[in-house]
Amino acid sequence: MLTRSSRSKSKIKPPAATKRTAAKRAARKPAAAKRGTAKRSASSGRSLPEWNLADLYPAIDAREVRRDLDRAHADAVAFEQDYKGRIVEMAQQKDAGRRLAEAVRRFEALDELTGRLMSFAGLLRAGDTTDPARGKFYGDTYDAITAASLHLLFFPLELNRIDEETLEAAMADPALGHYRPYIDVVRLERPYQLDDRTEQLFHEKAVTGFTAWNRLFAETIASLRFKVAGKALPLEPTLNLLQDKEERTRKAAAGALAHTFKQHLPTFTLITNTLAKDKEISDRWRGFADIADSRHLSNRVEPEIVDALVTAVRTAYPQLSHRYYALKARWLGKRRLAHWDRNAPLPQVPNRAIPWDEARTTVLEAYGAFSPRMAEIAERFFTKAWIDAPPRPGKMPGAFSHPTVPSVHPYVLLNYQGKPRDVMTLAHELGHGVHQVLAAANGPLMAQTPLTLAETASVFGEMLTFKKLLEETKDRKRRRAMLALKVEDMLNTVVRQIAFYTLERAIHTERREGELTADRIGALWLKTQAESLGPAIDLKPGYETFWCYIGHFIHAPFYVYAYAFGDCLVNALYAVYEDAHEGFAERYLAMLAAGGTKTHAELLAPFGLDARDPGFWQGGLAVIARMIDELEGMEHSK
Image (cartoon, rainbow, N blue to C red; front, side, top):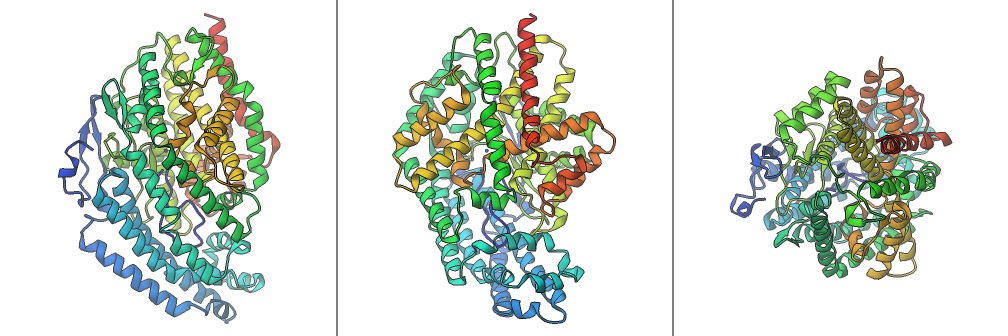
């Protein structure tokens, strides 16, 4: 998943880098934002689409890019000249609502413009992070947008200096009242904002601080090669081999990962320590009490709700992951599973590559059975070249859906290799894409949903696709394999992500007392992994290095609990859907269309759900437990 900014939209910021080529690619003109093309995939045997970025800009060196960069700077300077030092005074005037609304509209237009530029630069770079021309363009664009946005820093700071009574009176004007959700988010940051000069320093230093270390991580990961069976593979295909039907292949892939990660441990350890310290400095200056409070604030979720989620999941480890992996070990004829067997396919189940066209049909039919409108929006991604699917050397690993800006459309990045999990990933990212299309009508300042709710549409899309496939599967072995795959994906989404969150808390807490060595980070990784996976998983030597490649730790600290939040929320939503289909799709799409204009409590109320209810999380986890019950029943009845 990717959102245009991992922080609150109270300021215009360059967006965060993205998150989850052929050998001759360098010979192609890297400046081109090419038309949608297709590449032949060896794993699926079908042509895979590549995205068309020309809807943003024609090319790196296009005159439109230079024009908009110049315009962004000029408009930002003009905005500062017109409004700096006058916002509080304007709020006290008779027509305060109209005047402030006009200022917010101009600010929003600049957010749209800078977001378009950075989206283009970020997506180009994601397509090939090893291309020097793309890297330079991304860095230069980031620098230019940072310089322009320095002239805008004053605006949210001055909005927060308006007293509550005066601001409420101004928002009685419908023109300003329209922006209440945005202003409410700005006001949440009021206790943590600093003086103008300090905010400017933090903003400028981000270019050589947080952003630079993120870029180093992304480019390092993309450049790594892992030698398996005589072939030097990038990260994504190597990770994919951990799902191979042959144990020797899985073991070889795990060994290659460990070997290469170990060679680069000093770099990853330095990046991790530096970014943890960078965050501690920022949190201390802003007055955040807990290491995750800034994430909770940007997610607009109460810390006690996150604590309840984490406690519920960790308490459920024995009933969920521990029980499932013990069951899987028996299926594979082992007492314990080596870590490279955790995602192994089940034995005696045909393992075939799923062609791209079949994956497309599967997802669209599942979406269409739920809501024709949802399927129609998702189909645009295929017909209009909004998807980049083939794995390539240098391409960013994982998958995401980037909303770009409301005036354009989202783009989806995949690394499709024909695995069943790849079909679920397609369903997941298209769920994000549909959500982003529907929310775009709220405008740049209010389209983005907090991360805790941003995962709802993606996980719901997966659930729709899974249920469709399960209903169509009559063969007992295939059904068991499908249920097992779904359980594993849910464990990866819930249990694994909460284990990641637990690890992050440990690392950031210890970093306050000094740097962590690679051995110490590895020990914390093994401890949290062993706790979450249970005694049926044998963490072999080398696994202590596997924390290195988890990009969320770098790009968006404490992001990971949003996945567990979204999965449990979807389980609860799907239970409501199964009980009463009528009107559900309409309410669901309305929830997505609300974007960032409502809180989680407001969005869940039409479904009779409340995340503050202590039983809410147990209900979501019970869905996973019941699937494991069914799998155990299938084992006993064979």
